[in-house]
Amino acid sequence: MSKENGVVAVPKTYFFKMAKLDYANWEKALPREFLQNSVDAGASRVEISVDEKSRTITVSDDGCGMDYDTIKEKLLVLGGSKKDKGSIGAFGKAKEILFFSWEKYTIRTQNWLVVGEGAEYSIERVKDWHEGTTCSIKVWASEALDSVTAEFEIVASYFEVGCEIYVGGRRVKTHLKRGELLRSLDWADIYIERGVHSYYAAVRINGQWMFNEWLASMHEFGRVILEIKGYSLNALTSNRDSLKGDYSRKFRDLIAEFVTETKTALEPKRSIIRERFTGTGKIAVDSAKMQEKLREYLLSMSARVDRDELIDGVIDRLPEENTTSIDIDRVEETVKRMTGDIWDYENRFKFIGFQPDFHLIYDEMQKDKSRVDRFMQGSNAGKLANAWTEVLKQVLLDIELYIDFNVGFNFSITSTASYEMIDGEPYFYLNPHLLLSDCEGSPNWYSVSKVFLREDLILKAIHEIGHYKKDSHNEDFVLYTEWIRARTWKSLSIYPKIIKECFRKYLN
Image 1 (cartoon, rainbow, N blue to C red):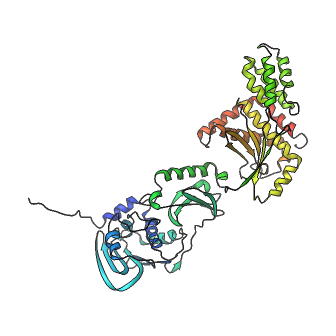
Image 2: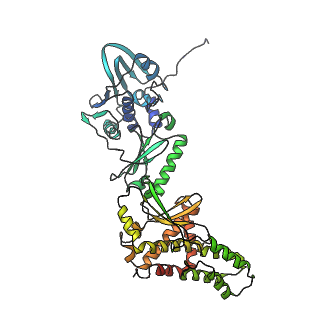
Image 3: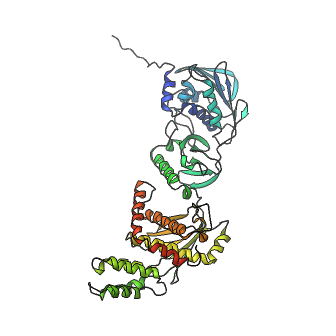
């Protein structure tokens, strides 16, 4: 047999079958690709019309159009594209869903007319010049025309671009507005439209919608829009239904942050003011001298010592101006539980005398700064600061985690309490304005039952201390905080005394 050359035949229905497999939702991908092409062509107006009798959808724009070389060498070649860097497309894949998938298609641009069916087409030079590009596709009889055409108006409402989009003669205005800028990253900007609730985060690039990502937990706070920066070839898969590579990982990390830290993640990054209070007052004291004296005392003692003598000796070496009956109880409890050598408890005795620095944090442009000032000038501020410090300290004692830590009030976030690590030191913050906010609304916390206040402070302390070891709100975090909670039971008599000592005259 002599040599025979040929070309693989492709039936007209082949591309439509592939499009259904290649796109997560081909009915949304179709209008998205048409609109992206028009925007990339610099169109200021796009018109979409439907002829139900002929089952034809027509998309016209006033963009730059296409010359012969672009049509022949780029448009009608799978994988080919002439789009400039910075355009949304440039993959050369969209033509599969735009043209080759349909029973028949026509393209009218400049002085060229293209008529095609599947992989077969004809190009004809015509006399009349056509501004922009007009494309028509004939939808298969097997597909519901109403379903296909309905998506054009929906997808058009997702676009926030400079050109006007008309569907059926009616202008479609965007339903996705960028709103407030929450975060600006090196690869994307994150916006939220507060007051508009959605179970999805919209992913766009240059205002052109790509796909939606399920984000049910955000429904309560507003609608999130992720605007990708840069060239689409870097960030998007060829079908533009998802992110690829490192971008996909970063997006998943961002979603995880929104899901697990909805309140803090949704708070815009603002310039904040930090005020630090140190010294030997009731809120803060440097414990270095106390620790040095205590160590000298322990060195002078034998391993076998009278318990009462030990209690008196340790208490005598606590900072006199800062020692409370709570500290005395802590020393007594420690001595009562001692089963080994005194040196096994050296760190615990030193930690009992430790008092952290106190920090006040608020937004530089905070609207209710006067409210912050009024609170800090009142008598309850210092009492709450003491209570928060002592509860944190007791939880750390209960789990035998003797760390130097910092405390403070943070009025700049929406969380009732928060944790952060700065220069290797943990900071535990409380928001007095949102204290007990989950208990009967937002009451004046100083007028509620001391039982409610105590439990709220303990739970917040356990939660934030849990973040010292566990970052995310996952199963490990839950198990760890439950473990911490179980260890606080052995000090049930001390926590009520903390609240009583700090709020003797202010609680029921």
